[in-house]
Image (cartoon, rainbow, N blue to C red; front, side):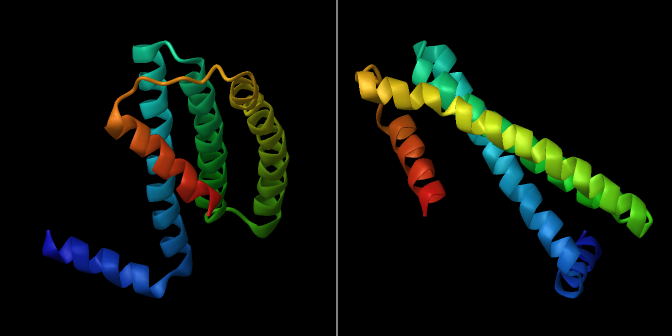
Length: 137
């Protein structure tokens, strides 16, 4: 177990690509968890607000997974094939970002109408608030 941890730390220090992929994987997992958390809150409280936020984070998770998949698969390809894969990923990411922006219409409309009242309790409300502030910084 300790040898495996030492190998991971050694690889972390020597490879920028490994650092990027590992840290991006943790970030993607956190985003996916937050999407599931908001989805669960939406189901429990029948909240359109939570459904819309969960959709936003789900699309963000899909974008991140697509980029990670491109980078991991690209390591074993020739430069020409990798460039083609990057262009395709770039195009898919543009489409997904457009969908992600459209998905934010829901929360904005709910805020303008004043229909985003919550009865979540302190912990879920603080979690949503801190995650939102973190993403804005």
